[in-house]
Structures are given as structure tokens and as C-alpha cells.
Amino acid sequence: MRSAADAGHIDTLRIERSMAGLAQLGDWVDTVTAALGLGKAAEYAVRLCVEEATVNVVMHGVAEGAADNDAGFVVLRVEPAQDALRVTVEDRCGAFDPLHAPPPEPPIDLETARVGGLGIHLMRQYARAISYERAGDTNRLTLTIAR
Image 1 (cartoon, helix red, strand yellow):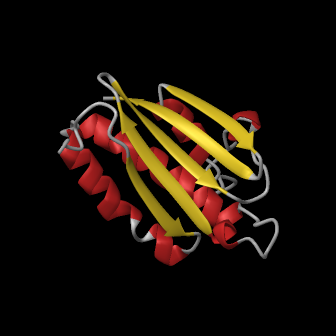
Image 2 (cartoon, rainbow, N blue to C red):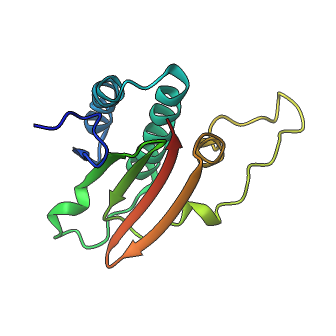
């Protein structure tokens, strides 16, 4: 039996596209990062990227085709390689390519600063590479994070 730290092993989590689903992320990230023996910096990057990407789907994704049972779920996969992890987040909401999202504009002052809107920017900072594809009716966001 291979351990989670073996190259090529894929860890998968399927959660409801809901606040209850989001509540499962922390324990899953803890389990995956511990099994892979990641250092604090890599663990933080995985946690931040997984949470930001999944929160965006839950909070902003609009399911297309209400009869589709998979539209209410998000599937996350972590595939380790020797020097990096590939984290994939898939959903069946409307097409959304975060690579085309503009960078956030800095606030003029604290009074005009708004809360939120930095998730995609933060993922760009913590992931070595980010790719997006629309495969049929599935959004697939893949983040490569240094180990």
C-alpha cells in the first residue's frame, strides 16, 4: 500500500457547495499536508489556495442546469510530485476563468478600503503556477504549489 507522501498518489475530497461543505476543508488539508510532511510555508500555501478557490465557488458560483446532481458539489484533488503539489478544484457552475480577473485596485485610504476581493490575487502570490480550463460543463482550476 502506498502512503499519501508517494509521488503520484491522489487525495480527493468531494464536498457540498455550501457552508457545511466548506467546514470540511480544514481537516482535509490538515490530513493531506501532514501525510505529505509539508513544511509550514507549503502547508499555508495549500490551505490558502484551497480555501480561497473553494470559497469562491461556494459564494459566487451559479449552478447551471439545476437538474444536474453534481452541480451542488466541489471536488478537490491533491497530486504530489517531488518538488510540488498539484491542487485541482472542480465545479459544475457557470464558466469562470480566474486568470482573467483583474488585479485588485489598492484602496485610496482605510475608509474606502473594502473587505474581500483578494482571493485570486493571493492565490497568484502563493501558487507557483495556475491554470484554468472549461471541460464540457466543468470548471477545472489547477494550482501548482512548491513543496
